[in-house]
Length: 309
Ligand code: PMP
Image (tube, rainbow, N blue to C red; front, side, top):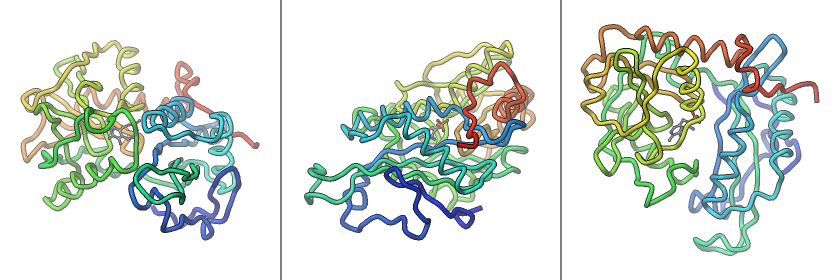
């Protein structure tokens, strides 16, 4: 799965061919990573392609931009229309969606003065990020030597391009060491999150996850899992997680738009729980997949149908 099947890109309100969608080398984003973005998924349903929680993703994009004082020169409704148009023009029934708002070329320097804010929307077919096998049998996770930046250094609840160098270091380090994914501690020494995923642990019938006080991005999949878990009758606790909580967990899983719900089989070479995926993870995973593909009426309001335009 790569960009091979994408022919069209939505760029500043227009559909342009993939080959013509460039950024000038002098653009502020190229120099400093000055942009914000989203990762969204569109799923195949009986009623055609549907975007999962588009509203919340677009809200987070505007809030990420606001935290960096980036003024998006477009109302949210036009951005949502742009997402649908990009999917329709490429003819995808399911895909990953990547809107990016970034500073173009203006006055040189870190303050991005007189730099226009550009908006591009890329879409491409993308399998679960940690693999079908990973989703089915669980992944092996390492403890990153890189610490998640503290929310007093960069706003961790914003999804900003430059911040992902921290994730890149952690993810590469894990793969170099033969693991599928990394977990990062925060500056206080508690668990933060994966490079692009939140974490949940299960203790008997209780789910536990952390929140922004642990310097994490508040994932939309995380939020969906909390709602699904409540609906399935599980208690959900939200507080800081220590490494010992993970070691003692009966189950653990990662959540994210790209990774969806991926069980953790091992952490630093030690198995988590008795079986992977455990029964709670499996139930949540199944409900999540049913929700995203439109098979559970109680979650229909999470779907935004792409329609015929
Ligand atoms: N944490 C980080 C650092 C991420 O990049 C992501 C992916 N957006 C997540 C958590 C999960 O967020 P979501 O469920 O909204 O994709």
